[in-house]
Length: 246
Image (cartoon, rainbow, N blue to C red; front, top):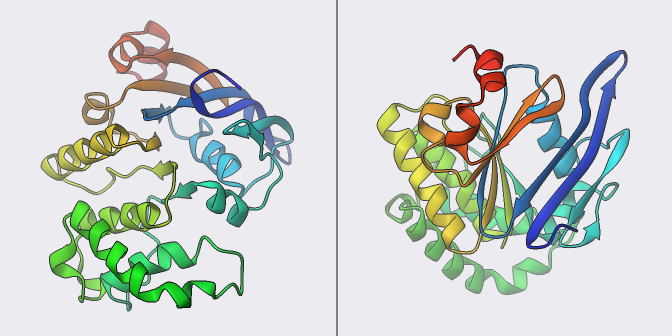
């Protein structure tokens, strides 16, 4: 394991029939960091998140989390270890209240049919309110999730990850569909989370905004890491400029 890194995904290869989506990609996420994963459409970004979260198994390579090889562990085991995943289109229970959605963030990390959480219901409600206060949704605790705006739904997904005591949050284009003001607020909040002891690996296209907040950036191109480093340095790389036609 790389010293000081929470996650290392090394030499990842993933093929779908004759298509090679990932071709030896290697990335690392340090402790307490906000890492951006960028690249043109079809470069393998979401596929890499799916390998890290356990949705896909790689054809080659390893995923190491806190020094443990989790390459072939099931997604719910990874959730129990502290890896959470959000999606470009929020996956929440729209008919459930905001509070119940957050509590479900704790429940869903457990193995199927494990209902031991019920004995801790009062404690979980208290913690859920604390998490909602952190993401500034506590005033909407009793509303159905269907009444939340796009930005609030992104925050609700983050709240669910925090409720599950996640150490690493994987996010797929959280800025999608948000106006610039809300996007800046969301990325600032994510940066603040990384200073509170969480690590984030974020796929994002809106690099003009995200680059101001990330600690480190990887750019994928044709399934490989084209460039890596501090965001400003990466975005000035001639190869990256050509890949994005910046």
